[in-house]
Image 1 (cartoon, rainbow, N blue to C red):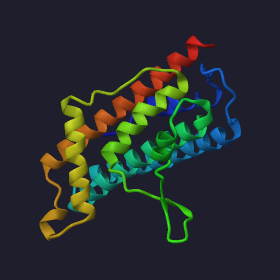
Image 2: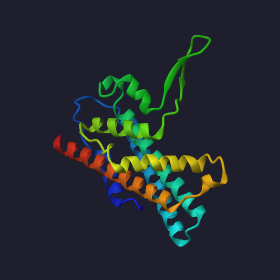
Image 3: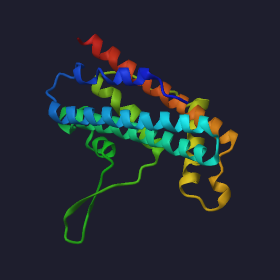
Image 4: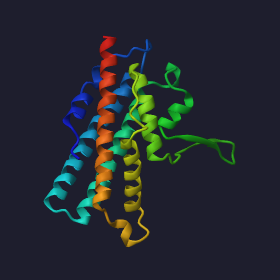
Length: 213
């Protein structure tokens, strides 16, 4: 369940890649987003490593719950950062994303209040949908083509692991706080799927960048 260092090494090339889209981009805004992605990854990766070591030292229910929560903080955090970098790299005027896609990447929606003023709202988008959105949009800022395997067992196990995480964070009874060996198997499979998807995504982007250099 330990995330490969290959993920971090691939992240490190981000601030020097080439855009194949032939348009001027707001590099300052993008650089800020990329730096935030890197620092968030580093912090959350350290948390996952610590949670794994904690559970290895003493396999208690508390250690298991901590591992599940920490892993999903990593998955949600990295997914959110990929979306943020995509939105910062390709505003609507570049034509890479539609206005609606930019809003979704930023987790924004709009409404009109009683005074006729437009207000920005923060919609609640399910994690599995945010993952699909990030993987669909992020490659486009590199001119890359990539899609994880959303039809296989790994994606199904990730969705099961999300339900386990939700049960732990919103328990309705004491039994909801128990993490079984089967639960851990689903969480482990979810972490493998997500890690493979991230590495595949970043490699595809790196290859696309190299083809335009």
